Every structure is written in C-alpha cells, then in structure tokens.
Length: 86
Image (tube, rainbow, N blue to C red):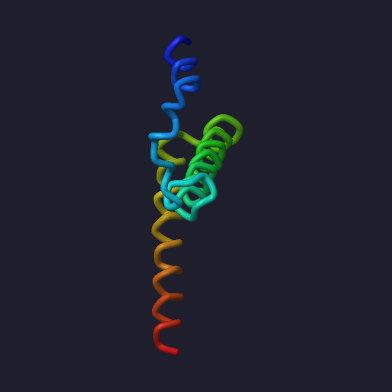
C-alpha cells in the first residue's frame, strides 16, 4: 500500500512509458485474442454438452472436434483456392 501511495504522490508514474497501441485493449491483436478465448469457451461448453447431456464418450467428442477441424480446414482451403483463381 505504501509503495502505491509513493508511486502516486512522488509522480513516479510519469516515468513509465504508455502501452503500445499494438498491445492496447482495443487493438486488433487483443480483440483477436478475446475472440479466440471466447471460441475456446464455446468449444468447452460444446464438449461438456456432448459428454454430459448426450452421453458421448470423451474420445468421441474429441473425434467430432477433430473431424470438424479437418473439414473446416478443407472448406477454407477450397474457398481460398477458388478466390485465388478469380
């Protein structure tokens, strides 16, 4: 507590460089990290639903996510190739 009070009263905060705009809370990088975190929470929720509510074994849930990853990569690759052709 004393260090914080000294930090403010002695104006030590003026010697600290501000956070780069690249790492600021509203930057593209941090927004992307937030979206990835939200996606991971959604995937975790789906895994819980599949295993707890539907009774699918854990390995079955992992297999479904692996197949979904492979097919989404395939679709993105095909779309990317189609866009490059045009």
